Length: 59
Image 1: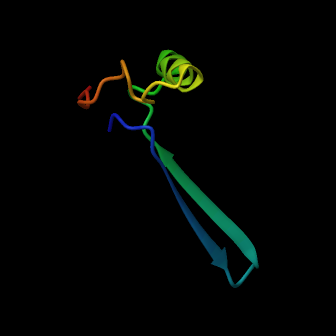
Image 2 (image 1 turned 180 degrees about the vertical axis):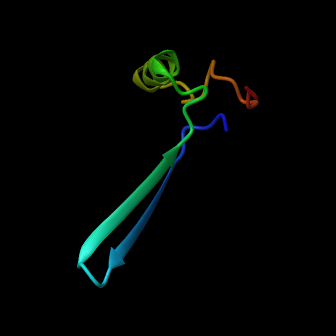
């Protein structure tokens, strides 16, 4: 919780030949405002996490 991570899992179903893709993201802190701060930091050449909470929030 409280990260910008996305975990992706990929499997192939041999019976159907289909690819199954699953993903899980943490968006408790990572909303539009968090994205805006992160983008500003990147554009200005600052540390990407500057001004973003480092400690997870628990709902």
